Amino acid sequence: MSTKLIKMLSILAIVGLPLMLLIGSFISFNNNEVDLRNRFTQKTSERTAFYDKMWKIFSQKGQVAIKNDSSFRKNIEVIMGAREDKDGLMMKWVQESNPNANYSEVSALYKDLSRAIEAERDGFFVQEKYLQDIKLQHDNLIGKFPAVVFASVLGKKPLEYRPITSDRTDGVISSGKDNDVKVF
Image (cartoon, rainbow, N blue to C red; front, top):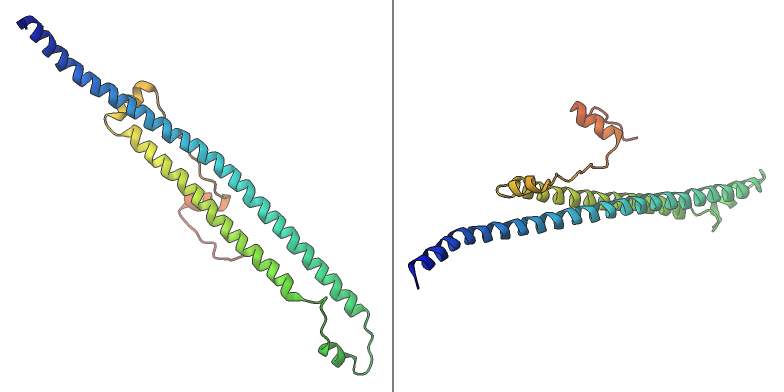
C-alpha cells in the first residue's frame, strides 16, 4: 500500500469513527425521545378515559344508593302509616320481622359507594404518577448533555403536563397554607 492511501484511510477513520458515533447517538436520542413522547400521549389519553370511567362509577353508584334509600324510606312510611294506636300494638311492631325494612342493605350500598370512590381515586392518583414519571424521564433525556444539543437542533420541547387538581388544592399550593380542618 502506498503512503498516500494509508494517510487517507487514517484521516477517514479519524473523522469517520467519531462521525458515526455522533450519528448513532443522535439516532438513539431521537428514538428515545419519540418513545417517551408517545408513551406520554398514550398515558394522557388513558388518564382521560380513567377520569371519565371514575366519574361514571361515582354517579351511577350514587344514583343506585339514593334510589334504594328513597325506596327504603317509602317502605317505612307505608308500614308506619298503616298502623294505628291500639293497645299492645307497639310491642307487636317491635317484635315483628319486617323484610321490607332492611336498613343494612341501604347501608351496604353507601359502604360500597365509599369503597368505590376511594379505590377509583387511588387508581387516578396512579395514573397521575405514571404521567409525572414519563415527564421526568423526558426532561432528563432532553436536558442532559449531549442530548440537550440534539434536542436544540431538532427543536424538541419539554412535554406539557398539568396535573388534575381542585381549586382548594391550587389555593393551598399558592398560599402555602392549609387551615381548613373540617371533614365536611
